[in-house]
Image 1 (cartoon, rainbow, N blue to C red):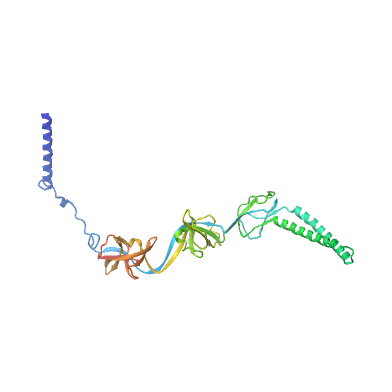
Image 2 (image 1 turned 180 degrees about the vertical axis):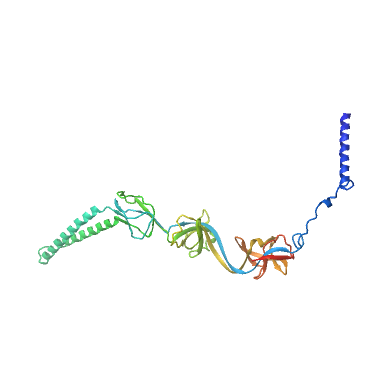
Length: 366
């Protein structure tokens, strides 16, 4: 035990001796350098810089007034102006296909011809029957005028003529229905039949889509339901298609969607070149209100502070703080309602480093 105590005492003495030697070295008694001498002095900062010397280099803009359009961005989807799956009203065998897939057709263009051979034969029979009935009616008319037959017999003969004429008109209508035509102008899709196919009423033949004008469907939050109305102008962009497209709101749902609390609208846009296809996702810019002669400044130039916001303006080589009141925010800019005047020089960079009244120099003016 005494041996362990002796070792501990020697260790303590050794530590104290090392501490004394270190202190003597640091105080230059043993030739060591003072810490202040070994630390390089910082290079002199330019006057007015964040270190307090020299004018601060900044960028600035000249305040001017312009027009501000308040808008919101929502998602939308394009839809065709008209779309239908063409089918036959009557049964029959496809005698001839008169269209090419993917082509544009006009309203009334024949697309499919069904077999009408039986109806044509029936019409010939009816024509013969009509001629016969006309002759019978003429003979009975002559006899009736000489009182050779009764009025009833003559009228029955006349009725038979009219009956056959009606049957011929019905036959013509049946023939016309077997020529399937485009109900409106548009672009055809892919056919689903072949020549020789038998069509039942309602069997799909091909789709026909009209995309000029194109329809744009979108919804806005319910608080804008009294602002966005038929006649409101909107813009929209499509993925993979360059540029913006204009549209005009044409109609709206009569109620708010209770599930999403949104108001659904439909706008119409010209599509002469067919660049806009139905079913495409779109980003819609809905204009809400326009403000004339308003001031917009970069958001980065605004310094938030307790109870308000401020900016720095350049006056006589110094940065002067100005308290402002802001309004609408759009992308990288914000509206200034009060505090700035047209013609002021607004400092846009370094606003977090400069202090009120600091010397500044403008390196770039926009």
